[in-house]
Length: 170
Image 1 (tube, one colour):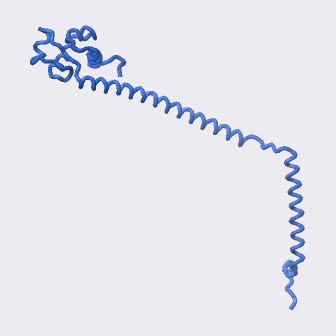
Image 2 (image 1 turned 90 degrees about the horizontal axis):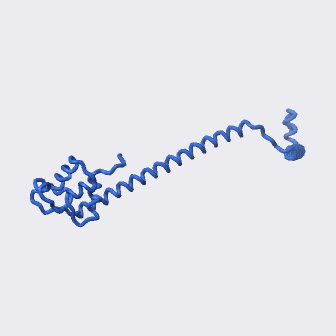
């Protein structure tokens, strides 16, 4: 949308600060073109913008100065315009925050994938003292397992006979 304000909005802003004014004063102040002035005169005649007390405004506004007044409806139009502008600005701000958050998450994803790849392709470095400790624990466990196996053989004569493929005597 254009950054220039519509002539209706400029007219409302002009009228808000005045108790009464004429279309000529308004047109001069906000620099209306003749076409814009004619459009505004028609809107005023149909009482769609500004209050007046003329019965045939469209026929009389060029002949004599007719006072116009800022109405409550005009105030609400101006307030709605201001709210719309604030909403647009908030929307732009929210869009930029969302784009920024999306960019950060994509960058984080790429960095995470790269670090995972580097970690998978790097050699595993275990300090020598840990390797020696693991070897001692493994040898100790192997000796313990062998001792348990020997003890279990001693208590089970039937097992020895099964291992020798000999049937027990009756």
